[in-house]
Each structure stands twice: as structure tokens, then as C-alpha cells.
Length: 146
Image (cartoon, rainbow, N blue to C red; front, side, top):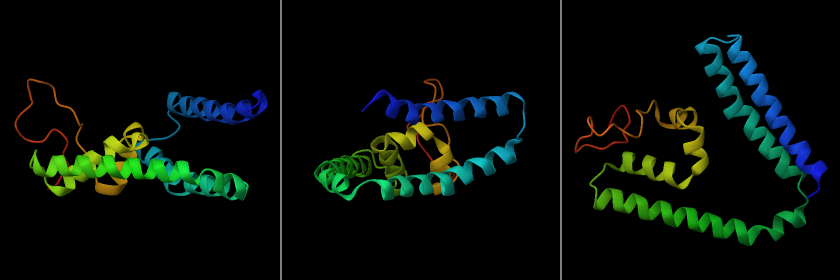
């Protein structure tokens, strides 16, 4: 990869971060507007951008990467299955909670993006960690309803 290719990928990301910072700093959006913009981005713009980038990728490049994609998918699925199994059998967590926790562990981008994605999938989540003084024997990662 050349410097120009890296530059054309990195600069738009930083420009968007600066635009987001500027709009937040100037309070151009209220909470409802920010939620609408987040939903537009996650449900329309991001999938469209991913589809476009895949569509523009030469087919031979996609075919060359199939073994890696298969290996990564198998690895993610295996770790997910093990985590769900351990949480269900050893930790006695309900399936819904075990599945969400395993998903957050296996898919780092979900954990990075936080509740903006998981909230759209399963509703609002409480913080995954509790302070030691408030910890109990109940699950530390839970949803609104069991």
C-alpha cells in the first residue's frame, strides 16, 4: 500500500471525527437528532458503503481472500459457541443474556461501537460492569427484560 492510498482512507475518517466534534461542541443536534443521525449512519450509510466497497473490489481479490474469511468466520463462530455454552451451562445464564455477552466478546466492533448497535438489536442495555460494592451474584451484563 502506498502513502497516497493510506492517506485517502485515513483523512476522511479524521474529517468526520472533526465534524462530529464540531457539531457536538456547538450543540447543533439535540439527543433526538443525534439518535436519528446515528440510526441513519448505522442502518443506511454504513451498509451502503460496505456494499459499494465490496462491489468495487476485483473478484480475484475476493476469491484470494476466501480462505482467510472462512478461517475467521470459523474462529468467531467457535469462540461464540464456546462462550454461549459456558455461560449457559457453567454460569447458568439465560440464553438471551449468554448470546448477547458472547456476541460482545466475539465481535470487537460491536463492543467498540457500544449500545448504539446492540441497543438497536435488543433494546437498551445496562453497563456491562458494576462497581465491586454493587456487585452481586446476579449477572453483570443484562438487558431490560429476561
